[in-house]
Structures are given as structure tokens and as C-alpha cells.
Image 1: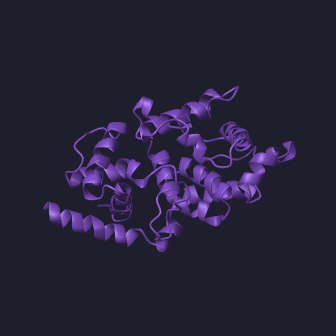
Image 2: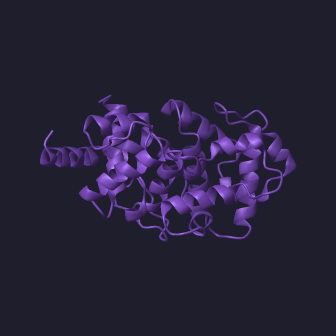
Image 3: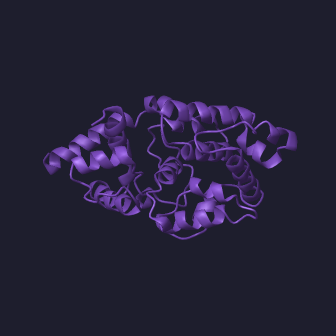
Length: 253
């Protein structure tokens, strides 16, 4: 496909998928259940971390967790009782189990007792998304008695992970284009800084269009893809996540 045709094609796909109708069948539907900023942040974080595998299952398990937290995740994390924590003892999503969940809740309790927003947990570490995610990983696991098994659930560029789920979460929190999908409630990070979430589906589509050369689907691939997307829209390169994801997952392109 010629470059001008490809740009129009991708822009058309962004318009197709970046619509309120996209929300219902995507994990972003979980934070959309809430209106309080902190609830959106926590619900969105869990939904993003759970986002591997079947989307229906991801949404179902995320809703199950929100119900176990009385559909008030911020209040639950800050003010839960031991009896309320016992309710979580059977929760499991793939390799994410109660041990992981209890550590996540303890992190949120510690963080929100000092800061009003989860945004600070990311932005206190530097300007680039690479520094933001590397610093967040270190901060997230800075509590005492970190379960070794829990570390696999939070990716970091230091290990050359694509950090797909965290980059998706940043997209949700940072982008604001009045289309009703992304929230745009974090203002300290610019949409121009964001890195495109990349998984096997997105990578397959990008390689098919010859806009990604790297064979591994890792952090370097995420940077390479985003560098190309910035040539299409320097201010908002990650809007093309809608196009690439839609083509890869919805259309099996």
C-alpha cells in the first residue's frame, strides 16, 4: 500500500474504532463504570493488568473483582477490614491470584494515603515514558515483603518487555480527544510522549504494512513502531493503537 493510501486507511480505522461503541467489548469498559478519579485509576489499573487472553473473560473477571470490592475500589483499598479481605481469598485470573491481589491493594493503600492520584506514582520518576515505567516498577515493589511471584505482573523496559498493558493504561489515563473512550484525566504526561501498546496482534499488522521491521515484540519494537506513528501525528501518535488493534483483533487482518 502506498504511503498516502496507508495514512488515509489508518486514519479511517482510527475513526471507526475510536467511538463510544468500542467501550462495551473492551477492558476500558471497567473504569468507565466509575466517575470518581481514584476509582477510575484503580479499576483501570486492574483491568489493564488483567488484559491478556480473551477479552470477554478479562471484562468478566474485572467486574467480579470490582464487586468483591463493593464497587468502590478506592474506598476499599484505603479502608478495608480483615473480614473484607477474606472475601478476596478465592479470586483468581489466570496466573494472578490472591497473593498478588493483596499486595496490589496494600500498594494502593500506601500510595493513596500520601497522594491524591495514581498519576504521581508514574510521574515522580522522570520525563520519558521509559523512565516513567522503569521508575514505577521500582516504586510499586518498594514495600516490605514483596511476594516474588507478584513481580511478573508488572512489566518494565529494563527487562526489554513491550510493557503493552502499562502503555495501554497510560493511553487510557492520558489521551483526551472528546471521543468518549480514553479518559484524559492525567495532565502531567503529554499524549505526544506515549508509547504505542504492542502485542502479537498489533505487531503482526504493523509488519504487514512494513511499518515495523523488528522481529521481536519487545520494548525496542514498541519504540520503533511509535517512532513511525509520530511521523503521522506527532501530537497524538498512540491514537493509531485503535487502528492497529482493531485490524489485528476485530478484523483478523
